[in-house]
Image (cartoon, rainbow, N blue to C red; front, top):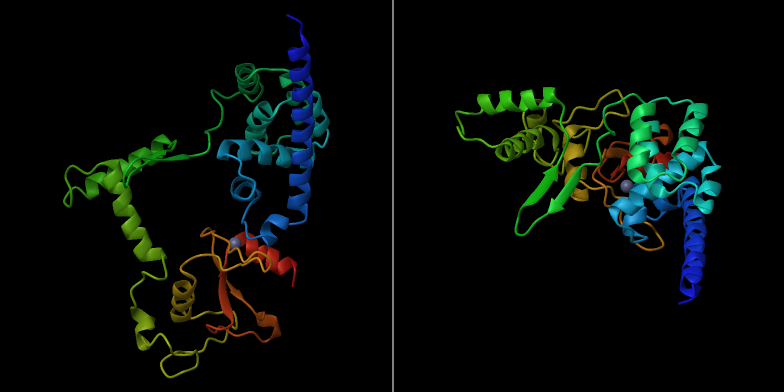
Length: 296
Ligand SMILES: [Zn+2]
């Protein structure tokens, strides 16, 4: 049997590496141009999963490489040559992103993990950074059948103690409370506190419970601070936007799906006379708020 098949496969693997390098380079350009934000994705990771169809772990390895390439552009060459691969790069990046690691130290570590397997890389990183184990992996949510899901999280011992204290305090409600029951209980409590659409109207808000009232109308005090947004208006906006970023890509019509770090945005900025009215306000995620500010 001749080795033609092996030679062909070797060629394909080289081509695969070259293409991976090009994908990383393009992802970097996309991030620099904020194209993912323009298209309605709140992060490059979300763009890689939802627009490019990568699995979460594949997207994580590629976006880790993009982060590293910003500081160490030479890694693209090393990916191309096969000296480094996306797995050991993302493992190293999980250490580099934890604190201020000098660029010289990052280069030194990368040289040590060249051509290394996953387990060899792990041993080197643990030794180089003087830790007992790799940093915790991304939290994992697994959907199961029915209405349930499995959530894998790594907790500090202190957090576990707090959860146990809460279980004891809530024992009068449910003496056999599980951690799942407690999490549900905490969600109910926190959502009532934090979600504007669930918050009950009380205190100063009860002066006018008519949700159609405009600021300045009877019962709604005007604040001397032009940036102040009355809680009632906030609730109206939150309900109208369904607690989701309202950015829409004009080309595709895709709306950003983020519910993370939502902020109230004045469509006509306050400095240009924009007021805190329902018509002049919208919800944007942090990424699209910054994107909007950079493009005003
Ligand atoms: Zn957004």
